[in-house]
Length: 570
Image (cartoon, rainbow, N blue to C red):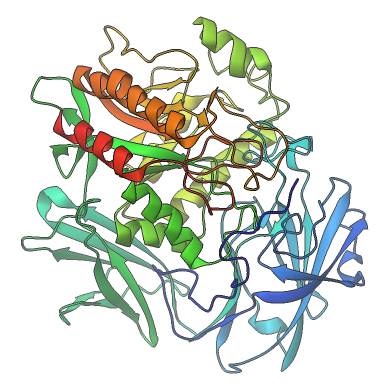
């Protein structure tokens, strides 16, 4: 792979609080230079945390990335050991250690004592480390990441990467920080807007089971509760949309603890257009979601964007091109990315993370494309024989929903994509509904349709045509994939795309033709949403609107904006 820098490669330091929806003032970032080592062994080995670490690594960038300054892959038979030192800033407080994400399984040691562990490479977790702390402290993180060598959740990571599969990302890849809290504190909030009744419900979870708390809204009005829930009536609320991304900020107060947060008044649902065809609804009105597949990979940081400005660049580029939706593809971003979608006005479709064994080409490629649909209760066919990893999928789904439930911009969940480790999708959707009944679910994006609430289609090599006699909402959840490789802006000598073009003029002409001859007519016929592949190039894939290094925009943004406006007019 060629090493490509983004415009932000030289400015990766960030002092911004990592979790905007539960924000406190009293915190300490541990991002920066740590030491690490790669050792053969088992994560359960009693002395693995004592490993001598002699390699410098810039956290939170994974060792495989350019920005980590390591440039090495963690192999399945290795343990990646991290070590750093920090001073205790608040002696009389509870100290909570936070990890944004660590891929895949990790154990945490403070001053030589085991403090906690976590399984799952995409969700955040925290550990109360108060009892282990001294004035000066040593933190060790030991990580095991088999990537695609075991049937774990892994996204698009693959040791033998190429085409649509990418370089692995192991270890710490999101921020690490400490919060200093009073003895009784807020663990989480659950925020549910109810547009139909013009109110919002805010529930609290505390570390000691207490339920009496207060909300100070942005008008400085105080709301109180003794039962752990406050319902605030919203008179003539300003409704959130991509065109009007209005956020309401507030402060939650529990005894001596205070956190800042926000919500939006909005509703995502399924309804009918004036002509009786099913459609997506935003705030009880028909709304066409036109979007981009967003892999969230960076040429210098892989899974981790160099800084906030880089995250904002991608979202603003999509908006500049007239898109109102990003489908976050098989990845969970840092919470600041979702905050920027919330405040800038970008609808998010959130994929869950695929797992399973080595995929069967008949299941994920051949049979679906000749119209043969196989029940996803056939675990072996879909590479989901491992019962423990099916159980872990449910556990990770719960963690994901709990982490992202409050994000206003998330409209839709996607449990499975193209049969990759798919299983029992209708049962999975029933479980998902118990976690979140407020959003739309695309149970099987692309194919392997099991009769969920949407008909979800991927179309690349042949023209898209609306299916006949389909009563469910129809979404084109992937299409396009037009490829243009620009010299000096690719990380691989190979190029991958579904149709290749030699220059920007030919690419833009093809995009205009695609919209005018397929997408706009399909919208008139009842198409509810369309997601173009994709926002940026990624390694071999050169089918992005922008190059992998984010230095060359390949499309005419004004042209795409005009084409997307036509979708809203038809």
